[in-house]
Length: 366
Picture 1 (cartoon, rainbow, N blue to C red):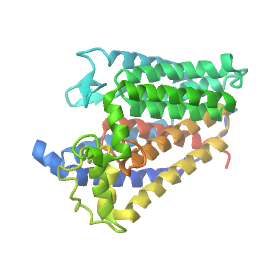
Picture 2 (picture 1 turned 30 degrees about the vertical axis):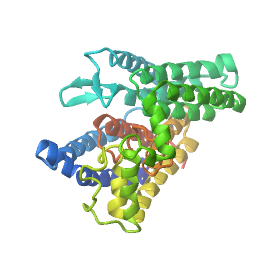
Picture 3 (picture 1 turned 180 degrees about the horizontal axis):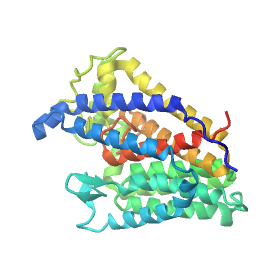
């Protein structure tokens, strides 16, 4: 029998709304110069980000109030649909090519990124199979390997786009789910060693990835090429100091730093609001992760616990990688910062995922 629902976790709600508010303001600040230069409207991206945020919040509260059993029922159909979309997006003339990756489906200004939806579908499906009565995750061939095979198939389709960033988040989230489900460490360690070899192979197979690794180790070796993004990002973060240059006062957003409103929005934030501002964003993400793990620990059943773990891991991994990239801790890869970076599919999907967290929080043991 289901426990009677209580109020959702308002600490997460508060943290998310603060991150969204910061995101809309920073998308405007970071994109105003570029938007005016390209579209003649400095609010071009900010208005769309506000629309995406409103749609995402609507979905978040809608999902927070539906029957939680629906998540398990929709897990398999959702995964199948995402696999179909990942295959369709690879068809020339159907998938939209942007920045060298065929990752979008849509018409005109309206487009979606199927790989973003695959992350959430994979979480729900893996949680479903791992929580089935009698499923033995500790067995290699009948437990660990099937989940890994499904994860690998999705990763392969995403790499055909190619999109190593999203693929990394997908695999990282999946591995945390497998660990949380009780897989043996020797199985996970063996896969990590195999995965490391595969990752090296993927890097060596694409010259631009090798350039990114070299640029990560020494961006000044190619300051106008592979190292350009990182150098301009550090030029933004460095002058920010403790309090920043002031909101709207960034210099790097004036067509120096590429993608200032998407992948590198945290750089502009650090430049304008300094260490204290950047630290506040990190704390807000830490609050979301803390409350997400609390929901996972207190969930009423294994499926709910694994779903909460997966969603929390997805947000955490994406935030850590993005902040690590812009600060020079990781090689440059195209991963946006949840809730802050401009982008329709990513923002609405992440808010929908938070809606699932809020839904599950209503059944937790408090």
